[in-house]
Every structure is written in C-alpha cells, then in structure tokens.
Length: 219
Image (cartoon, rainbow, N blue to C red; front, side):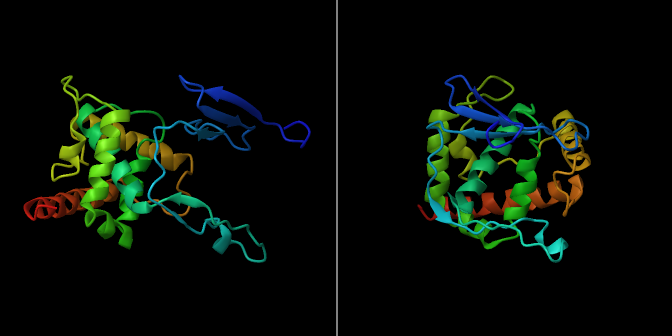
C-alpha cells in the first residue's frame, strides 16, 4: 500500500483467518456506524452458485454530468440465490430477536429491492434453489432460536418464512435502519422503515404462498 502511495492496511481476521480486512482513512466519519473497511471472505461456507455475469455501475454516475465513471462485468451470485440467502438470514433474526452486526437492516432493504425485479418471481418459482440454500445453511450456519431450539431452514423455504420481527426486536431493527440512513449508506434512495417492513410483509406472504403451492404439487 505504501508503494502505491495509499494509506491503508491489510489484516487477517476470522476464526480460521479466512477474512482479509482492508482499512483506510475515512474522508467523513459521520456517526461511526459504518467503519471505513472492506472485508473479503475466502472461506468455503459460500458456494457462489448459481452465478452469472452482471454489469456494475456507479450509483452517482447519473447525477454528475461530464464525468465518466468506471464500469465492470463481474461474475456474481445469481440474485435469486441472494434473495433466499437474505430471506433466511432475516428469518433467523425474527426467531432470535438479536442484531448480528452493523447495518443488519440492509437485508430487509435488499429484499424489498429484489422484490421490485423479476428475480423475486424467479426465486419463488424455484423451490429446488430454496431447498439448496436451506440444506447449505443447515450444515454451515446452524442457529438456535430464542428458546434454544435449532432453527429449521427447510421450514423457512417451504411456506413458513418469517420476515417481520415483533416487539423489541422490531424496534431494534428500526433503530439500526435509521442509523444506516443517517450515515448515508442509502444516499440516493431512502424509503422509510415502515415502507420496508410493509413491502417485506408482502414478500413474506407471497413467498410462503408460492412455496405451499409447490409443496402441494409435489415439487
């Protein structure tokens, strides 16, 4: 980093040293909610499949005239799998009622964003993919609910998905979302937390409806 004239450091993290953390000086600290780091994970707990090449552009590009921003065509996990990965993460939170790190409410925002595209319908119409996510998480991401009982991921992907927390856990998620907005993580589009929860309730009901139909059809 020093040879390139950059003030940044690289460190290993994680129980198995399978994470590389790039820390850099922050231009603006804000509330400190989001740390000035980039984390790269190299563990074997993510399959990366199915995947597809997708275009990536800068969000701010349409807002500034006369500046050409870089674009990329990375190979990324298919959005349909991303949906089920995030949906099951939200499901775990609803059963545990505990935040798991900073910006955790981003999962609900992302679910609402995915639901506005054709990827949501494709995810709901692919019970085999949903089951694959449940099987993978049952091995690599074993979790227990607030009562100490092992969480059943297969239930979440077969008609019993829970995306809406209640009581104090809903309030904590709302506070997390507000802090995320204050620090500008959603600079160009800032829906209210109430809107996000309302959208996720629709997503939950539709995903469960489709899963129950697929189950009844023996899929």
